[in-house]
Image (tube, rainbow over the protein chains, first blue to last red):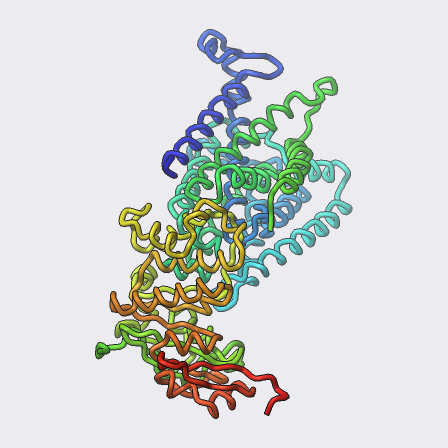
Length: 338
Length: 261
């Protein structure tokens, strides 16, 4: 089979899987709502369109972003074990959100055109993510060239620093606020920012980011074999590195400031896909977006059925870490390496 | 016959890494139809010179002209069609298949796949036909080096810069690759610059040799003008024996154990 056919088969299968999992997600729940009955079932329609659909979209987009940016950062940093949070974006986002929550800003959403609303916590978190990423990028660059190992190390250290700052803030605020902060940090898609329309703008931005990265897939292939290699095959390594880093960080900033910290998706999904579909980014980029979306949607579907007796749900971030951790170790141990 | 305008020209090039000078006032011209060998002790600036010639490193002073134009003025793809480079140490972090890797050499040509058979030819030529579908993360050092060479070979640029292309290769592949390089350079009017540690390969395959020491040119010319006893002894600081192969008119150099005088 030619690579083009293989690529089409993979993407087709993942699209089909996405549709199936979306169908399941919208149908199943505390009350099963068959999708073909929606026209004659107003309560079911409300349940599916106003409650389940926004959450499903949020889960799918977040999973897609995490796996996509994981794939891209792994190519840019030339390390198959890099994850979307390594560049310090998660620490910055968490710190921003913590400050906003500690100041009690959560109650007042800002109204935006087109009926959109923007929570101040989201905004603070996004600013925190953007600012930390920008600063780390600045510190890791020298003479216009990004030193990727520096960036990796600084990101890890900055995330530790941010957790320490969050600890400081948590010990200073009331127990209720500390609880709120803890809940935000855990990572959940159970509170979409509004009706499905509120997700339209982020969805368009995410798809634009996906398109930009996909269109530069060949350049990412070259870059993943080193700057010198990229230069030798006619790719400007500094240019593609900067672009991939900026688009990837912006996407992660959107995800992490909406949903908190959801670990392992950006590590497990690209790794598993690379084992199955190979390292070519012309396939890996769309496949990791769809695969990450399906993975998190399935995880959140499971989460919705956890602990019904207690009337509580596990944050999906906890489930992805519980499943993803062992899965990753298993994948790595089976891999024939150097 | 050499064409009047060199394909590559370095003119008074200086380069320093963090204040430590690596190249000092180095000038060299490379013409179509010739293989220029670069020899010299470890750390004398051979790889840095290739980096500067390829435009990857920007000289602090001096200029590098590719077909008459500053190498930095070319768009990346345009430059790649004229000039190829193969690193000394291939880095294989992701499991691309050998065929995919070789195809990447043709990114700049905008010919997806292998319509004119250049990829298949390069694979066969580097003895990689049987390994075409193997991930590069599972190749031996010599196979990896051949895969990287095949990548540059498939692109077929006008000039090739090769950094110790034979370092990990067995004798058969060393000869085979340098032989083919010489054929390609002569038949297609290409040019090549090859960093070599093996002075015998340099003597056998290069039209001219540039001997470097501490970032400067010691001597540049035909093998017989450069591979001379007092010159090599002074630069390498070791005892050597230089002889002439009967009938082949080719020099050979043997390093001698230090206790023999």
